[in-house]
Length: 69
Image (cartoon, rainbow, N blue to C red; front, top):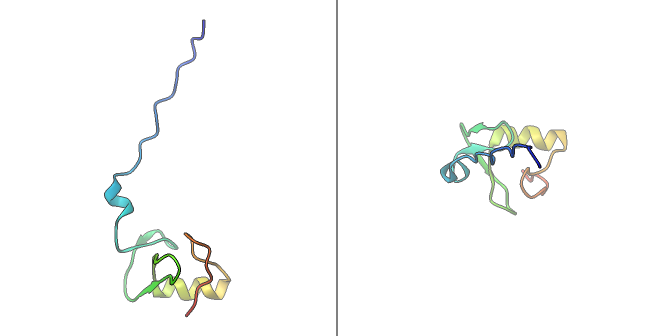
């Protein structure tokens, strides 16, 4: 007696999107210029974004480690 329609499952991005090497998690775009790599989880960020994040007291998006520059 249940006429509820089940929503379709979410569509996930292709796995190659997750593996993209030059993707900055701070500005959510392609890394341009020099790269900062988190020493803990090896996530990559634009050096400029990492400097701004450190100045603003932000941490690594992925592992929450402090930004060391």
